[in-house]
Length: 396
Image 1: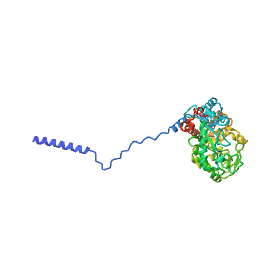
Image 2 (image 1 turned 180 degrees about the horizontal axis):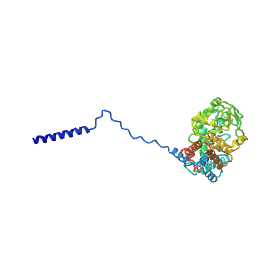
Image 3 (image 1 turned 60 degrees about the horizontal axis):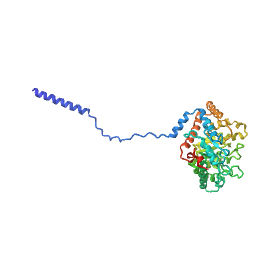
Image 4 (image 1 turned 90 degrees about the horizontal axis):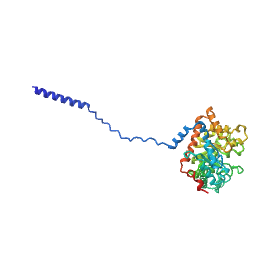
């Protein structure tokens, strides 16, 4: 009897353990297994964008103000120019005929000396349209000659012109005139790629294509000097042309150049009174049209702001006030060919930011665009980059 009782206890214990194990087992799911998903790679980092943002964050308001200035190169002497540009903190320089000495070698020696920080060189620019506007020896066809040739001739001519500019160590050509006028007596007549929008537009686009990857292209003089007769070097040309008429007769060459990838657009000192009583270079409305209608997202540079003083208009007599107004309106790069105190001008801009006359974000946006352009020069494989520091020895 004891044996039977012991056996029964053992059996009961075994059954209890078996029941416990069965209850603890996980249920079997009828759902299909989840597919294996690899880990998502982090988004690639844009090294140039990160560099620009870091530099921008490290700049004071005064430094940002100086960085959106482009002045005439302070001296044709390379070492004097180098010291002055570095001390001023300006974003770039323009070379006129007295600076280039109409020599590729002299220009290359000058421009190569200006780069103190290879990661962020100052921009260098020149007006090399060919024909009657040239700061370097240029045997290529003028715009007037190209106006009667197929668009491909403009592409070839501006590619060759870009190589000339690049060989001088210069990275921006203020050379593509997108204005149109049928007036043979206009001061623009020798400089345009067509007397009407339909003929000029494809040649403007071809010129930008020709310069692509060799120098940075600039379209001028937005919104169209041909629509406002008169020479803006001596006055502020004015027109009552409607916006719709402008869209039909003046805008297409600029639109074609923007669509072709021009990196800069130069704002003219022109009044289209149906749009704004202010010159376009100081007009929020015109900068808005350039951005919103034409879709331009590059650098908007003013025409020489010294020209506003030459107009004789009392309201435009203060060069610093003109710079503040242009920047507030939407300019990214303020061009001064005439003498200007860069320190005082930068301080005036910084004061305008402090007072709210220029929103801080507006200055930041302008400084960022200029920094991006400078950075693109620094790390590009284009001729103007390879040339820096060696051009003077490589050309004659």
